[in-house]
Length: 149
Image 1 (cartoon, rainbow, N blue to C red):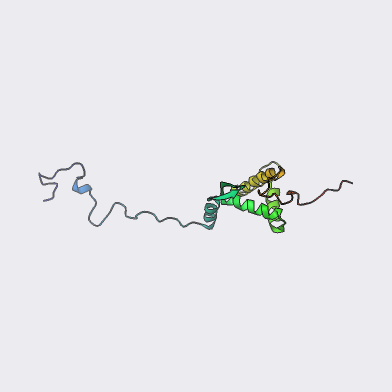
Image 2 (cartoon, rainbow, N blue to C red):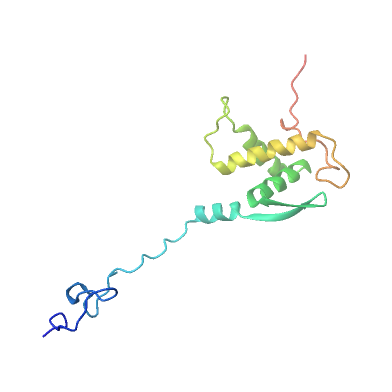
């Protein structure tokens, strides 16, 4: 005689009928929680490049992403005369199509905007001690001059 046949057995809140309960040794989630998918290299790089860090610019602390920091460092090296950094920066800047769209990943687009911001800052007169104050102005054409004759 089962407990359902017992007249004292009560079906109700937190007391389901025996026929609808999990059988002994079996749970309702046979496969369990799915394992976390391993992270790819691209996902790991994107995650780290999107992470923010604090830097000190002109005596003020500013939070920027790692990709912005990389762009600033490459541009600073290019301005100081590092040819590899200049080639990288100029290659990114020149990769824009004639219609303004590049079809490039968002990270490259972000580098381009950072470069444009940097050019706007370097066009003004920097105060002493600020970024780029002792460096010559950045020439986006890489020093190429057209013949005027």
